[in-house]
Image (cartoon, rainbow, N blue to C red; front, side):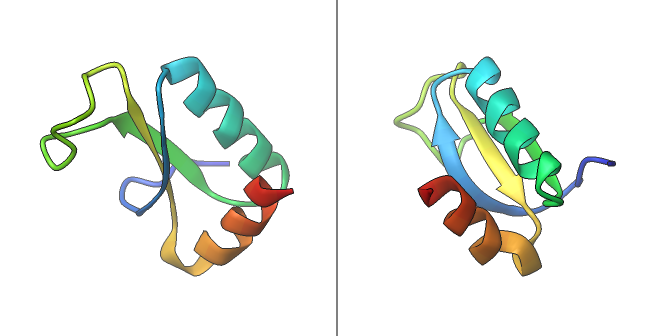
Length: 68
């Protein structure tokens, strides 16, 4: 499944490996996912933090999946 180029923030995690794990779980469940280093809009996070992004139309489904 292809990664999304743009999306909405689902969560922010402290490492790339954690972001990879979350995206893997989401993708297995049919949710498009991507992640990137946290940017200038998150000044409290260092460069090691990663935003996990999903498409807007799958945001609620992704939130429900992570809550379980």
